[in-house]
Length: 111
Length: 475
Image 1 (tube, rainbow over the protein chains, first blue to last red):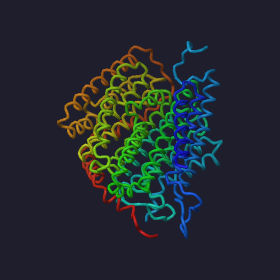
Image 2 (cartoon, one colour; image 1 turned 45 degrees about the horizontal axis):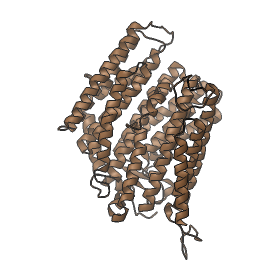
Image 3 (spheres, rainbow over the protein chains, first blue to last red; image 1 turned 135 degrees about the vertical axis):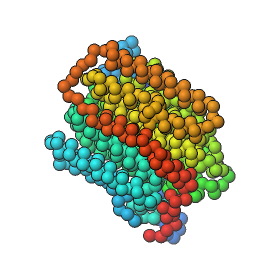
Image 4 (spheres, each protein chain N blue to C red; image 1 turned 60 degrees about the vertical axis):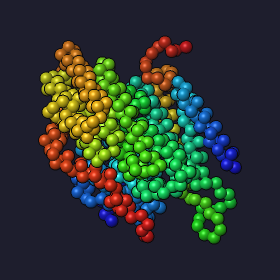
């Protein structure tokens, strides 16, 4: 289980960083989404992996409820932020006619 | 427990909601709510500045289980600075009509203030992340206010950079939580010295990640690339308000560097100072050369702002009470000076008469650190606190010279060579207020310096801050 989750986080982060380094907006947004998935998983398991346990202190084993609350907040925020970025990227694409990420208004990079 | 402590966060949120719900069509109502709200925030900040260090527990949940807000001298200072700057910038944006060039300016403005105030008040690291996001999402809206191709493209870069920063922040927080089991800053200060030796490397990793996040906010080299494009393309008043946004990064660096990761913590030791020092030196250099090399005024001011962040963080990196007090004085000064310059740059687009030129010269002198304004006092305090550090001295002094040359050249090109458009509207009230604040800061340097050295002492001996969170108390 540990290996599976660690590998998932690692793969998501690696793909996210690779896509972040592209020079077009769309891959960068995808990369940021993948990174936020990776960090959500990372936050979720920061309370350790525990199977078949309720997040309530009582009789028997329990799991830490705080990371679950944190990850919910993080999911909502990253979702909202990605939506804002998509809208702004669309605006930039529609006004500029291309989605290069560098701010120079240059004409020589048009195909 | 005083309920006043939550008001700087709740009041702007409620007013911003009221603007969206009830004052959509009427500009005057929006302006009135916005101005009255900012005035109330200023009054609140003045009240809170006289309040002793205390905690506020949301929902009355005891720390570290619930979210705690903590007001100490530094938070109160930052609240006061934010409210004063917000009022000045608001006057300018109303007088110049910037608030009519797009929708929801006043609501976004108040949400921005809510995020800033919350970030300065919170005593919980995860809550700090949340308030960072609140102030960022409002700043995204403000940054592209008015629209335009260059502005939106710069805005996309700004958002992408900060989203990456937020991701790093969460990675750091999760690492800290999995090692210590708490995210309350005062609780971290108590628990970190007792972590097992095997977890030291995890804590060091988390500390560096956190510093990276704050360095992005503070525009520290090599993470400063977002700033010139953002500030130069943002509307003038918004760029002036953003002068306090970089200071959020500086605030967080000071807070975490003195409370959570102090120099005597075995796990991190001098790690943060040793990383911050060279980065700050490089930041000063980049700021100075950028000021010299750029031709457009807003971009030049943005580079000068980067340079001033370098000077500020060089003083922070010393982590002594004397240097921290100097850094705090310089922080107030550089916020106001940067804002004044951005407001003048906004004015100079449409009007370049003698008074505008004189105001530009006064602000540029303040920014470069020449007498008689507060930049000189601030740099003097920093040089005094860093005595013996010949490298820091020479970098700061050379950078001041380069900044001055850069501003002198741009100023003479702009005000002497270029044809002077004479727009009908003129509103220098906000700029005059800004410069008056700088003058007051200079004249009252003695008492302010004393108050700031007490603040710095409290930061380096955070017993009162930790006591204010009432750790271990039962509800």
